[in-house]
Image 1 (cartoon, rainbow, N blue to C red):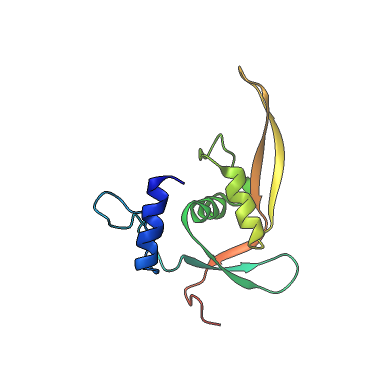
Image 2 (image 1 turned 45 degrees about the horizontal axis):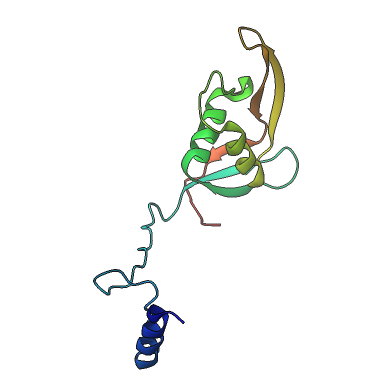
Length: 135
């Protein structure tokens, strides 16, 4: 048994509630502070799907930005080429998980790196919900 472990056990026996394994040089526990919440809530939207009853969602961050872009362009849709963003597919995935109907249209493109890309088109009716979380 090494001397350090024995010392820690002796100290732990003297103060059972104290954890000496994660202390820094000043004998202050090295515990990461809890991150401060940036926002308590996001932006409320009312979604009218093509089938089923309307419902409300709350969207924040880059997912909110992507939803606003999709609303702004309408039936034209958004592509990573015309609307640069790091993770369009992830934003669309998250919005679909909230219940939005977003179609992916595959389009070819030319140029030095010819291939295809996705165009995302919002098919659900989405409006800002000024009532917020109220039913």
